[in-house]
Every structure is written in structure tokens, then in C-alpha cells.
Length: 429
Ligand SMILES: *Cc1c(COP(=O)(O)O)cnc(C)c1O
Image 1 (cartoon, protein in one colour):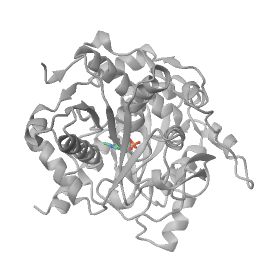
Image 2 (tube, rainbow, N blue to C red):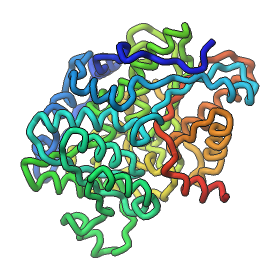
Image 3 (cartoon, rainbow, N blue to C red):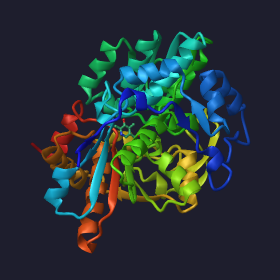
Image 4 (cartoon, rainbow, N blue to C red):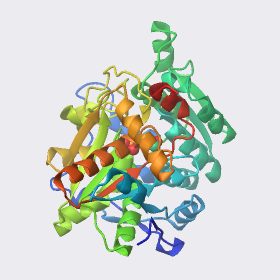
């Protein structure tokens, strides 16, 4: 039995999966608030045309353009699926544990899967620059990388609380030729107003989105790119789960439990949605668990229409939300700190098809499990991915207690090589 399950470049999936037509109930569309200008019109102006089309698509299987397939291959796809044999042995669990290696991405996370697609379409549509927000910094790095490969400029508004401590990642973005601003910044009206109230404002993802949107609206040759939450982003990310399904076929196994960490939902969605397809259309029995932080347990919020950003520039989305202006304590797994969850995954949760667990905000328990993981398997997970690892280990220990031989599949959304300061602070070494 193999430990590393690989696909050849010929086996790279050539279509993304759009779950929207297969959802158990119709997906509530984005809508305008009762008052003010049309946010739907505004969004149409700032998004990449093809992404907007995909956002509303009812087509089940969408061809991945040849150019994007080439970029995926350049970025190292298909990626390995590993059987966590050493970890299983150490835990003495009867469970079989498998993890997907999104940490092998050139910039460190799964985010390149949608960044490459978006930059490719933007270039084709004659755009010159992409503007965006970033929280943990992974999305900013991924878009900087994809923009450069596709010949576009890139401007990044980065939540100040994180901008300040991730200096190496900031350098990486600059190596890739991006312009990077701490958010709130003095480059936008939204930012200036918040800085006036508090010059040391730590920022939030919601605020950074507002800044990126304002920037993108300033010119016809600039578009706004989003790294999570939206339907088209989750669809691009299904490449993860589609590969994983082929890999399970190769070893004639199949997951009983599918786990990943969840901030806005893109890595969880990308990994899990192809398996939801099996659950919804082939009656497969799978349990899905999203691992979150108690600092931002958005799946335990209310299911209602809410804005996706702080300044209420976006349309309202029907989603599980903590409120678009909620204050959240900073954590090192900052990529999980967002007030709302993707509408698609929110619907699945509302239908009772998505479980969630939220770990304490001191992150000690989570990071200790990440430390165990790197010592047994050799790969250092991103602080966000550590939540996925923690949840998978908890499930494996549960299997041991009940002597159950379950198959646990979990996604490692990124590596933590540029986030070691976070581990160092929490684990105190
Ligand atoms: C952005 C990010 C996350 C969280 O965002 P999702 O959209 O929920 O996936 C998790 N892990 C890593 C490594 C990330 O970069």
C-alpha cells in the first residue's frame, strides 16, 4: 500500500464542478439592500466579466480553459494525496487518515487555484490591474503571483494587524511586483475616514474589501478579485476535491468523514463540494466537518442576508454571519477570521449537511496538534490548516475510543513556512 498517491499531468481534471444546480434547494441570490444605490450594478462594474458570468451559472460542469490548465500544471498540479501512516501509528487509531497536499503550492496555499483562473480571464478581457484585500496574506501572495504570470499589475490592501507581523510574506508579495498597503490605508476614502478615527486601526477583512472595491471602481482597466466566499471561487477550487476523488479511486478507498478549516469557505468548499456531489446524487453517506476558531465561528451565527464587507459596498448575501461590522479578536490563524460563510456552504449547513467545531482562540490546543503533525508527517501546516489537522486528529482519536475503522480525509490548505512567528508566540519557544 502506497503512502503517496499521485496523478499524472494527463489525469488533471479538465472541468470544474458547479454544485449550484445540484443543491437540495435553490440558492438564494444576492440582493440589494432596501436603501441606497444598487450594489448589484456596482459589483457588475468591478468584477472580472467571466467570473461574474460563472457566479450566476447553472451549468454543472464548466470547461477549464487550456491556458488555465497549463498554469495549473506550471503550479504543480495535480497535487499529492498522502496516507498519514506515521500519524495513524502514533495515535494507534484504527482509522485510515488521508490528507491533500495544497501546501505544495508555489506561494504556499490553495488560493492559487482561483487566482490563476481569475488573472487569466482578466488578461483576456484586456484589464491591466487587479485590486484585492488580504487577511492572512495568502490570498494577496497568490494573486500577486498569478497577476505577474499573466502580465497584470496587482494592488493589495492588507489588514494592518497581520501586515505588521508577517514581514517575510510582505517581502514575497513585493518580490512578485505587487503594491501592498496596510489597511485601513490613506489610499481610499473608506481608509482615510477610519484612520482619522484611529491612526493605529488594526483593520479587518471587511474593511480591506471595501478599500479594494473603491480602488477597482476608480478605473475601467482595474477589476476587483475575491479570494473566497463567492460561488465562482469555490467552483475554481473544486479542482482540489476532483483530484482527490481520482486519488481515492486509485487506492480503492473512500472517505466517511471529510474535514477542512473554514474561513470564507474556499478551501473547505473546493475539497468537499465534489464529495457533496456524491452525497447528493449518489446517496453516499459522508459526514462533513468544518474546523473554525471561536474567534470567528461564523457557521454558528445567524442564517440571513448580510453585507460581505464593512462599508456595505457589496450586495447582501444569504449566509451564516456574525454581522458585517462585528469586532473579532486577532488570532494567528487569521485566514479563518471572517464574519460570513460562503452562500453555497451556508445553504448546505442550513440543510443539516455540514457540521462544525470551533476551537479556543488561544490556539494552543490546535497548534500543539500541528506540531505533532509536522513531527510525524514532516509537513508544516499553515496556522489555518492546523485547525483541519486538529479536527482530523480528534476524529481519529474518537475512532480509537469506539474502535471504528473510518476513513478520514482532510485538506491541508497551505504551509506555515512564512508564519512561524505565529507558532512561536503561541507555543512559546
Ligand atoms: C485563506 C486561507 C484559509 C481560509 O480561507 P477559506 O476561504 O475558508 O479557505 C485557510 N487556509 C489557508 C492556507 C488560507 O490561505
